[in-house]
Length: 359
Length: 271
Image: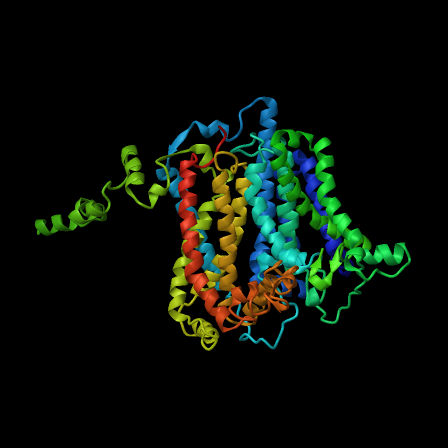
């Protein structure tokens, strides 16, 4: 038992968990006709449930999962995979029908018009009744959390934002607040709103499909499931005092020490590569970083337009194309920075703490 | 005797129901009556202000639970639940440092059958999740594609408003959980480029030679909290935004959102 716990504690370390989840996402999409089936769901979801139930016998696991405000995230742990599975199953079914020349599942019934009363109104009524029962039951069973009166002098450790912002707080590990807390949230909102204008693929409008828009769906799933939901779960359950990582069966030890060995790019370049001191002039010191960041945003759009994104460039035109690639590059910068941190302990690509300008 | 018997048999529930339905009061309220025929089922959708959010007829494919997951409807219902329970909570709650916390304690210990705060809190969490799932469904069915681009944008703003509503409400109990969650969250504003005093570029902005334009008492975070830390002014600001400001904006945008669903062709489906 202890060995299994140790293995799980190791596997849930951020670098491994995020990598495994990304692999699972892409592999399951590649072999979607095998993975998104009723059979897999009938094994997977009960297995998840049993895993949770057995884990509840572990003291540390029980403690973190039953924190009142963590209950909704436990629900999310099941809801999000379930609906991901459901939508992908429908997509796989529809793709198979299209291949065989049969009409889509939705198409079979589009021509049928039914009366809103009773067909839709009753469905809504049942949903309302069930939801009310659920809410009242939940509210009777679990009291809303209330800690001691607010005290500006006593900072709790860890101090966590509300759970739905923990993905952003987790980003703080890799980026400074001006990026993780201001620029990226802004870009997420703008990026989401831009989707209909940069996705000009006319197919897949109003029905589930994967094949006809695999690129859009994979980008969205990666952003939503890995970079948002998984980071929320990670931030909620696996980050303890001092925002250190703790496995699900690990005691939240306030004194757990993690070596701070992160190194700036300028250090790597001037000190380790060239064997000299870092220049005093900020711009000279950070010139490598500026080149890297500028190169990151300028070179790939041009290269991609001539190679794998040629189709996009021709369909979208230069303006939409460059906005799309810029947004994609911003999104990709998070996993890239993560990997750089995990592999090279890279702290900042550009580090100008004098002006709070760190990337 | 037989007269009494007649009277009693006339009092059967079925007859009573009939009598009520024939009465002037009932017919003045429910013009169409019980929708037992298709004609009446249509009229009831047209005549009722709430039901007329829906069209009279819908595509069968569009109302399948497997297709919509009912998440948009659930989100709206949760919004109504939160409005109602929130209103009740406002009777008991005073947004000052002196009273906020003790009012919550009172609410827990003195109010009989008091689960309004529980319903409000769990409902709020559930709404955040249902709004995400609604967005997820709309994406997976490609329902943001023309002609629904604009409504997707409105939906994104409504999602942000949901998060902000939840965030502003988080502070109100004025306990350690509330205060520090909001401290962590609002600390981000201090790093806003050019507008937060620890943001990049802020120290480039000066008045005249060397008076800083952006300081800890004149930056984005200060505007959000009404102070340099989460205190009395922050509580009041969050309370007003939570109870009045944000729900008004959300309600306004929901009207746009629902109207545009109808205008853009109802629940999406293959063409």
